[in-house]
Image (cartoon, rainbow, N blue to C red):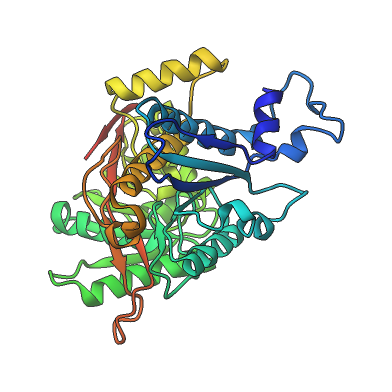
Length: 386
């Protein structure tokens, strides 16, 4: 493990074999590896035999991407890949982006937070190359950047898809948005109201009911109907609010038939527990790895053979992001930015990448975003996807 980390600290170059005359495309991968936290100045591992959980997401994303690049190396893909620790204490992210070896980079992939996305997106715009933001579920306030791609769909997109889903399957049901006071909750309410004003179909009759952060059954059941199904939307991104709401609705579901629509933050929650028995829960996610395939089984087994444990979704995210967009780069070369919406090269997820125009008046392209979402249904511990 130590040797692998040291290679990353040095921003190692993966030079793929193949046709020596072929011009190699350069990819820069940024991930939060926290190497300075893992090793002291003498190169000794700080945590003895333990492995802190905060290191897992970045490391697994990198490991998934590395597995994808390794598979391309085996077929002689003409690529050069530079990997950077975005949380390095020795070199700031800006210094890394401006390093000499990245002067002619063709593609940037990032597992990044909001401030890092802004730096990487700005660098991509200056270099006129695509930046794939693989994990941050918002646009980071970036506008007028046609080289920026939000792969992890924004809350606005989730809200649009939920609204369309309800129009298709629950237009005749009673629909209630159960919420609590808060800035994000107000933003979510505003999204639903804006969509209702612009929909080309018959608008839904949404009711917004503020039940507060804590509620009793009397306040909750007042918003329900014992004579017909009520579709309840959890109008908050707060996971604790959502789980408490799910448990309370499951308790009264035999008297008040309910379907609960959750938020994208529910993707990592355990919704199969007995507390939610009998309650139909539906939530949206842009990534779904619940269907085993020959490829997912193979790379999972490879991971297990190297690491004492099973891979998380972040490993698959790193793999498919790296493989899909590396293949697109190899095919389009310096014209990749003009081909971000191209279909195909699906690994696990069917992305639907579309241009986003925040200002409909001047129609300036602000960024690209994945608009494809999966609807995951959880009922009595069984999970299915639509």
